[in-house]
Amino acid sequence: MAARLDPLDLYDVRSLLTDEERMVQDTVGRFVDERVLPIIGDCFDQARFPKELIPEIAALGLLGATIPEEYGGAGMNGVSYGLICQELERGDSGLRSFASVQSSLCMYPIFAYGSEEQKRQYLPRMSAGEVIGCFGLTEPHGGSDPANMKTHAKKDGGDWIINGAKMWITNGNLAHIAIVWAQTEDGIQGFVVPTDTAGFKAQEIHKKMSLRASVTSALFFDNVRVPDSARLPNVKGLKGPLGCLTQARYGITWGPIGAAQACLKEVLDYTSERILFNRPLASNQAVQLKLADMARRITTAQLLSLQLGRLKDAGKMQPTQVSLAKWNNCRMAIDIARQCRDILGGAGITTEHGAIRHALNLESVITYEGTETVHELVVGRELTGINAF
Image (cartoon, rainbow, N blue to C red; front, top):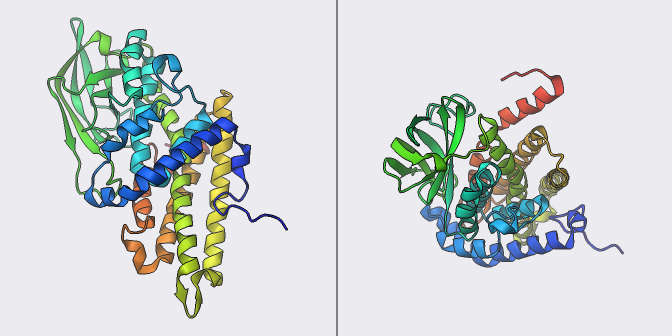
């Protein structure tokens, strides 16, 4: 008789991983089980990011995991980074967002676009969790149109003077540095701005119903003066920040798989124990149909992200492929989280269960770094050759 399949991995995607990739997944998975899950419901209730976990996250090599070891990173491949995102988001989207911003939106641009001096000054300490970064691109009026950037930097002798504002910035009030993108006379450029610079202000955003276990901020720049050595010298134009977003979106395609798996596992356990009309809820056909559909969609997402990771590691990944996976996997996860909340009934509205927390978090994940509609249009443009934006 064949062994029973893993309900969270029906196609045995794990068997397609290398030993090192499995080790990374197992290590992060244990951390999430032992250190995150016992506290994350309370963190969400209290709107508190568990910053006490940062040293442990750093010690596991999860910050800048793909950065070469010579700069303090772990030198992992793209699939391993994806698995880190998947396991962290199985805990909570806020925790994965923290790691995504630090790794893909802050350490990556310093590594890809920065000077050798900037790399050696910041990357080892960022990997160690001693310096936390935030990524200043989105503006209050901007949303999906980053080219409509009002923040500007003007040359003043050997310095730059930055004025403007950024909105919806993860880690803003935690950060020691901000990667700030600003219009200049020579196009959009990036700057590494220490958050203790005169004229810099971060204001935490409250009253959130999503990503409550995450720090989200508005940033303000009032004649912020930085030297030219703070400028990222090796990129100009929107391709700089968009290149960072592609890296982060890649990780986001993996993260929601973890959230969906957490919701499915919770509901599998619940429906096997919940007795209605003298039988387990799991024996109901309507429930089994919903569970089967969840497993189908999770399996599709797993294979999509794994192939995307293999393309990334082969140097063949294209932004449109990332858009397709981000669109599919976020939609998959938010639908599953909502469906699981429904199956849990009244119990599903409290943070004693994870489904409502994941569902609320995924309202942000499906929106940030490109809304579902934007990614649909990216794929449409690829198919037709016509830009419909």
